[in-house]
Image (tube, rainbow, N blue to C red; front, side, top):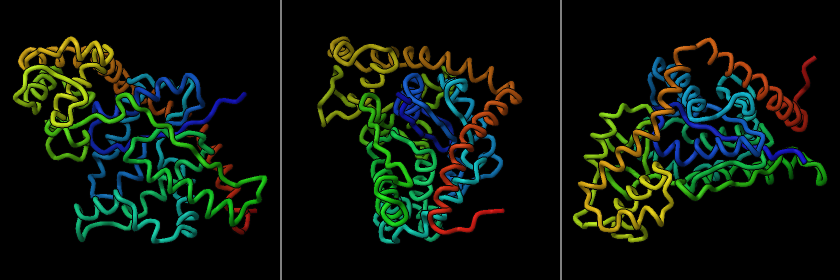
Length: 337
């Protein structure tokens, strides 16, 4: 039987951090062994908010290199840049023309970001979920790895495919677009901030001490963990809602050291923070060292890295263009001669 197809991607805004790795990229590495996998750097999404052009270009290449440093193998996965394939923007426009405005206005993340950006909120930010739907639907993805905060966006993609494309332009026994299913990864799927255990670790947090970047040097990792928020109790534990920082840091220790949660909880049940934090620091530095070493090798060979992206684009573009041509014909656009 053919492998099920998976598509995912990360924005090149700021440095990738533990949340990106543990919640997404590390799981992609396993998925590529059993699925047909497409991983893109979603740079078009990154320009929906104010940005620095030079930094964006640099971060885009760096993000692709970090994918590979984390274990994404270009021999079995397609790694590409979203903006390098025009079909993403073209399908987004076609989907825009059939997606009701009120569907977009109810999106939770837009409401939150609109408050943050005020009068500077862009149409692109409102339209972000339709572009995300285009990303997914272009590749006839069977499964899309998503965190809980992205489930609403995937539901929108499913609704657009089912209710606005297949039902209006397709036929019952031959849908135009495949309706993807969510792939929720539970373990390590939600890594929380070092400065507030109730908030998700995020690249957009202005406090850089709230996250550990994959490329942070050992001294900086040590400093960030040393300053991480704790509570006055001795001993770490899981499943105590009144101790979110203990839950988060103990979870990180389990994930970074490779120790299962039960063993980690037993090991640290009577441990003070002064003893625990050096253990977490050592485990984190050791886990990130091979990624950092591989990244340094890759980023010093831009020709090889660009060839990987060119090869990935060629594979992805063939699939994407086929889908786009199918939809353009279905909605009545005249075929090029």
